Image (cartoon, rainbow, N blue to C red; front, side, top):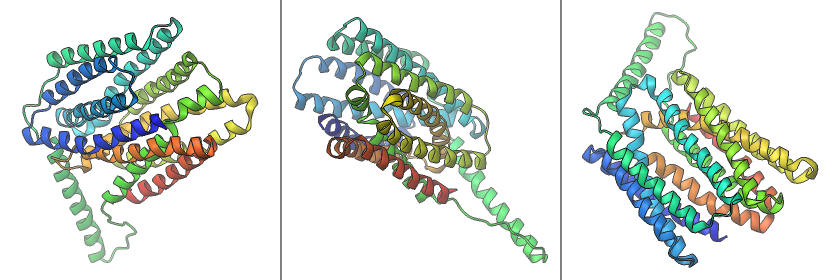
Length: 364
């Protein structure tokens, strides 16, 4: 419950922060400085973590860290969108997410090794602080702001012209007396936003208490929990590599729907893990690997579509919507696990993924 409260408070505070960072970076048209602020702040806060064991103070620090962590998210997304053409967004987001997921994977492996060799938590936090300092230095040298900001505006103009052209083409065929079954329909942006919130909610409900499931119910050591999550992360890297293949817009939407329904099936399948003790660890690990793979594909498509749908000045809205679902799920997941057991967590997550699928279906 303390973990759930900490995660929930942090994510709730990150919601207005995400909107603010997204607004301010587009308003000032400077992106690099907010990335630097994020990494430098994390460097300092992780050092402060080592100064106390008071739960209240740790929750406060974690919440502040969450506010500054999201400072680099919106600028990063805008940099990708503005430095590359729309046709290159999927490939670039896939490369970026795959590259950072590789860092996450290496971090899990290092965490496993630190656990094996008995390195204490204080030393681990100092090491993580040093990595953020290195991220700050490399960003200072390598990240540059775009000279011109126009790609997202061009994409919106192209969409409007394309919609108008299709409408005129259908009207022309009808005027000539030709039969047509083609429907002209604008994208349901509200359904997209709802689907994004629900997907984040279902993911957070499932993954927030999941380490407890592996360590307590499946009796895994801390080191083995690192291994399971490393396999999940490794599958994510493979997913990002495959997601770099070019899709047309309709292909993105179709793939998105299939991924969400697949995540729903995987969440429901975890219920069987609690019912089949002989193979529960193998099944749970396999499900986690497949979820990592599916999540990677989802992130590439959803980032590309969100940068297309969200206007300038509201680039932080993506993180706001994800935060709304994540904040709710990070509290609901542990509450369900503690009150009704993990089967209820898996059932709730699967059902919400299913509703998210319906929302994305409406959007497309």
